[in-house]
Length: 178
Image 1 (cartoon, rainbow, N blue to C red):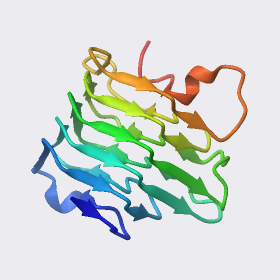
Image 2: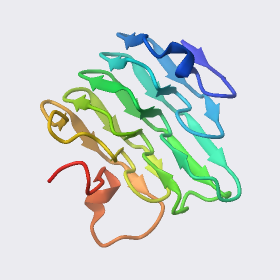
Image 3: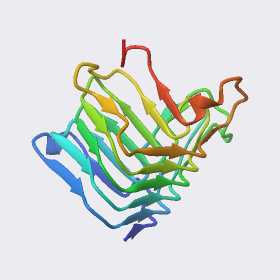
């Protein structure tokens, strides 16, 4: 169990460009970050595989107008695969409020012209200020990327009022899928 981290529990950055992070179990809970990915942040790596485990009750907060991404998981510029595990009860607060328009992906934020496959596990009860309370997908390679399978996404919220509540669970940036 990793808990109480003040700069995110796990960071896979540019030093680990050829590394693969695979999580099959464990708990990443009650961590904090001022940028994103309070549970796990993977940037510039070869691959991040989430096969099991729990990423929960993490908090990302920033001020006053810094964009923040991924309350539980933030993935950019690497291949991301999720076939299991649970991402839940994560929260993003920007500028002292959970209604900020610069807070995306309360549970999982995926972006950076990369490939992803999210086909299992569950993402629930997360909150972001704007888009993708559960999952935010942006700037991906649409040809091989996929979402679906046995993935369960439910009960996520965003801080602002919208007519279409579906954006509170999964937000697909227009360049992801045509």
